[in-house]
Length: 348
Figure 1 (tube, rainbow, N blue to C red):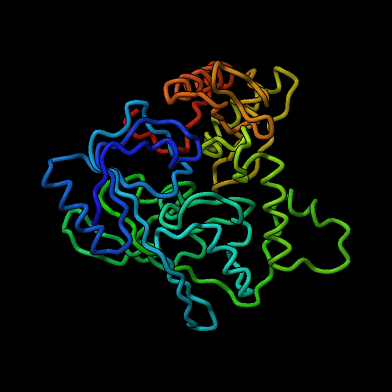
Figure 2 (cartoon, helix red, strand yellow; figure 1 turned 135 degrees about the horizontal axis):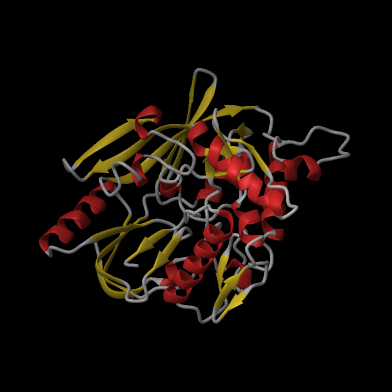
C-alpha cells in the first residue's frame, strides 16, 4: 500500500472541482483496503471512499483525512440456472463492464451504457437509466463491514434497494466499503426498449434491435444530452443529473398539478409507486427560470441537459453549491416541491 499526501481531487472527479486529499491511497486488493482502514485509524483520520468520481462534489478545502480509492479490478463470468453471473471488482469502469456483458450477448444492463463511474458505486444509489436499474440484476454485494472489520456478502434483499437509494446511502451510510458486485444477466435476452427515447430511436427499423444496437443507441442519446464523458467538452464537466425526480404522494401531486393548471401548464409524470407519482425534475427546473445554457459565474446548466450543473472551466465547489441552492429554493417557491440532489457532497 502506498500512501500519497496532498493529492488534488478535482482531476479525479467528472465535475473537476474540489481541493486536495491530505492522504490518498489507491487500493487494488481487499488486503490493501484493510491496510488503508488501519492507516486511517492509526492517524485518527476521517475516511472517505472514492469510486469513479462521477457523482461527487468535493469541497474547495478538500478532505482533511484519508481518501481511499477502491481500484479492485476483474470481471469473472459463471453460469447458474441458465443465467450468466458476473463477479466484478468495485474498481472496474462501469461502462467497460456493460460493454463486456453486451459483447457476450447478456441482457440486463444494456440501457445503463455510457454511465460514468465505477462498478462499486452502482449499488449505492441503485443507478438507473432508460428503464433499467442495477437492483434488477444485482445478485449480491461483497463489502467490508467497518463495524466488525469483516468481509461479508449481502444478498439483493439485504441491500434494500429503492429509487436511487440503498442501505449504503441511507440506514447504513458509512458502514460498508463495497469490494465486488455480482450481477445476474440473461444470455440471449432481448434489449429493454420501454423508454420513449429508445422507442423513438428505433422507430421504423425493419429488424429487431440487438443488445449492441441498444447500447449504441443509449450512448448516442446520452451524448446529445451531454451525459457521455467526452474529454474537453464543457457540458461534460458535470456530476450527471444533479437532482432526483421527486416521488410525490397523491395529495402532493394533486396540489402540484393545480399549480400547473393555474399557469396553463401540464406536468409530465408517470406512475412510480402504488399510490405515488414520479415527477420530472428537469421540467420543474426549466419552468422555474433555469433553461439549458443558464450561466451563473463560472458554473451553469448544461446546454444539452437541464439537470446537469456544469463547471464552465474555472468553477468552484462553492459556486456549484450556491447554484444548487438557488435552484432548489426557486423550485420550492414556485412549485412547492423541494428537489433532492443526487451527488455525494464531500466536506461541503
